[in-house]
Image 1 (cartoon, helix red, strand yellow):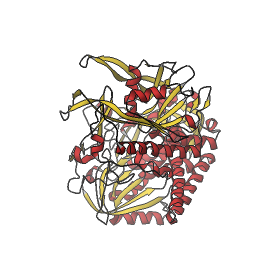
Image 2 (cartoon, rainbow, N blue to C red):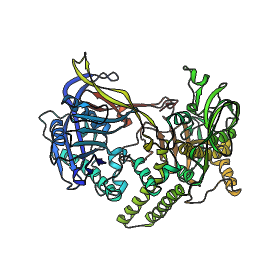
Image 3 (cartoon, rainbow, N blue to C red):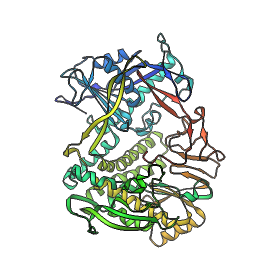
Image 4 (cartoon, rainbow, N blue to C red):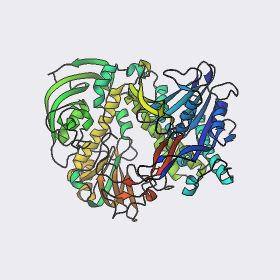
Length: 638
């Protein structure tokens, strides 16, 4: 991140930082769920580590930490990275507002600060303008490395591993006169060392002007190799972006209702090798300025890429077809006006005539799963489209790098070399899996800002967050939404074709993978391979790959299923329920679940769930154990 008028922030002005927090003796309120008292929070240990010297500085309260980072020191801009700014920032913002700093409406002036917190409560940074010449940027490293602290060493193979403690260590009450002991300091120093090593390694690869989110870094790598991308993919106007955005759909996660909750023996799983990167590389993508727009009553030009609004009716051809029109595509009609009814995210029936927005690719895909009738074409916007060699080069060079180093790591016996190879293949994977999502970035973004308001019950001013900020991206910073629409639509098309090919043997899908009944289903897959209908070439971009076979499986709903392997291990994917601590990144081990209790309605107690909920207090957030219930439907808009 550059310092305004001062050049790039140098390594000696970069730090990682962290807080340890505890209850005070003052009750804030009583918990509505448990009836237990919730106390005001305080920081009992804080610190930062300089990325150049790797020296740490410790503080035993928030005041001393904040006064230190805001002090003049060498009178230069400085950056502090917290790995979970949403949590630590909940202490920083109230401190700033109670110590004379005010929130700026635009660029902060001396004595002001700004926050970048979006409407979904994702925290990106806090910028404090200390003086006219000096500012402090506090940013969230979890946006750059989106994984828990314990898994950071896996990214670059850095040497220090996180120290794990028991639950009593985290919940221990530490009074105002508490003096941190050797165990406390070892744990805390480790929590500074782990992210510092990772960030230093990242800077070695990408330089001091690295981007602060994973997607931004990947897109920066893309535009470095394809500097003319803005001419190929010009910015959309706000009006065009708003019109076509309802055609930007996500991946399909779905279990047929008549198969939900049932046990199936002999389950196979296949997934697509780098599905979205393949679509970016090999499929036709829109580009350039709008060619033309058609008005009401005129069919779109099928030789171009288009997005259209239509009046339509549709119903799934049969229960073994995969639905591929989401509720979000419908902008008008009984299906969204009926507030009392519950509708699945992926629709089986339009429930009458609806007004919806879709792309030409999804129009073709929908005809394979639905009996669909277009009553009237309302409008359509057209672009030219083609396969782009520059995009293909970016994807394919990194994909080949990934394949190469993945194979070397598999054969390597030397631990150090194996780690190096894993790092190389992991960085290549992140680049190709993250860059294309930036094309779908919103032009108009809503954000939250903090306000001080008097709380009559508490008798004091407290920080209240309001969604009252609207940021409109400058034309230079806008991406080209039609590319994101096309990439995701091509990805859904490949998934739908496979699910429909499996038919009655299809059990479940999630974005780029299918689970199916081995008996009968595998014959269909083998036949499709023989006829050239699908490609299952190993280590081939966009090809189907056999992922595994399971003794049995049960699929309750989207992102909620359990499978048992042939060694008797139960692997459960349950969105919102954490895996067992220490079981590994992307683990599916959830010991609180078993074959007997894995059903809709099952409740996991706070003592077993490993799940925490955030409770806000005026002085900072508190994490508390909470239970988990397996519900029938996932959140439609979550």
